[in-house]
Amino acid sequence: MLLGLDGVHVEHVDRRDGLLTVTVSSPPGPAGCPSCGVIATGRGRRRRVLRDVPGADRVRLVWRQRVFRCEDTDCGRKTFMEQLPSLVAPRGSITARAVVWAIGQLRREHATVQGLARQLDTSWKTLWRAVEPELEQLAADESRFDGVSTLGVDEHIWHHVDPACAARKELTGMVDLTRDEHGKTHARLLDLVPGRSGRVYKAWLDQRGEDFRRNVKVAALDPFAGYKAAIDDKLHDAIAVLDAFHVVKLATAAVDEVRRRVQQDTLGHRGRKGDPLYGIQTILRAGAEHLTDKQRARLVAAINADPAHEEVFIAWQCAQQLRAAYHAKDLAQGRRIAVTVVDTFHTCPIPEIARLGRTLRRWRDAFLAYFTTGRSSNGGTEAVNGIIELHRRLARGFRNRHNYRLRMLLAAGGLTP
Image (cartoon, rainbow, N blue to C red; front, top):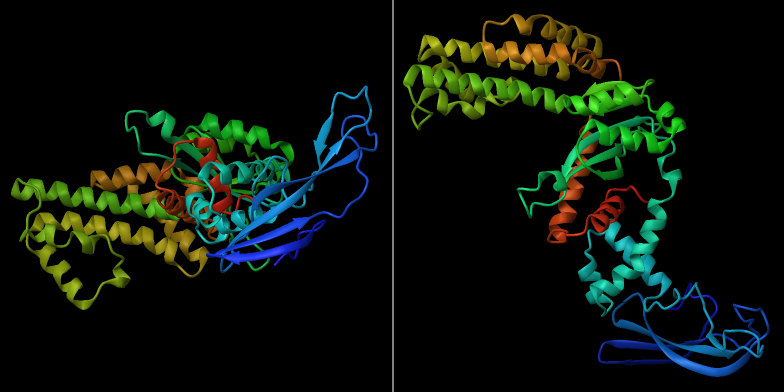
């Protein structure tokens, strides 16, 4: 049970009422005064109760801590206690290995601080006071930014307490999307900084230094001009890649806008049960390759119900063409389809599709970069956001942004205990 607790030996073990109490002490030996270095005189021991890693029972360590007196009359320190950093931090009440155990539970087992505090029979504040310095030390280690060649960025809302204060809720999250030697991405959160703007992203990139910025070769992002300006300004060697999911989402939204507009033009009201276009709204959001024969028949029947519905069908076909570019097995073929989309959509007589085409033309290089960077995307960043949302729900929300950042860096792989 005491494996790993160097510098102490067991004096007594007692178990009762689900509590295992282990009395330990350090062997006798000389000790120097921390202030003057003079060999001190032992003045007995005091009992200090510590919380340790729980097993089948709750565990208490009773450390018989040595007390010393400095014999130098000129020294301002009269008495002092022995310290064993391998056992417990100075003035702490949770053992060092219990702190390591708690950090591991927070990171891998989706635990909460309050739940771990109950297992250790202590308070939230006491446990967090022991864990926080370790996380701060890990977060301050700049070596965790080494080796980042693919960088993702996305906005994030860290609380929903005050809807009127949007500026204080928004964060910008940076994620490492670098692939391993097998081409697989292991996304990990690098940082969460206050604000959502290109200026915030630029400031963070400046803090990382020239070596970090030079090493980034691919920068994935959602279609937000602020982040794109920061990439163009600071990451001169990086290729900006527009996230595929958000591009397809824009196309799907355009089809939905066409459907609602045609619905109003033909029937003069919003979609209702029994209306042809209202009945296929979910079908229009699906990929053509996923439709069943029954769904295809419903789609054809709804389009044929009115000649004006042909506009909806054309918009849906445009969205399917865009999806086909991403689903092409051959990247060269996918790029050819994407180039056709960029060159033609803006000329479409359907206003919603023409607007989508103009958007893609503005983002042409970042849109086509997907096919020249081995399908790079911001998907790993969205996966990290999912982990963050999970831990925020488990904790029933956060009120302190500093604590929130440390917890999410730990949960999403940004720190390596």
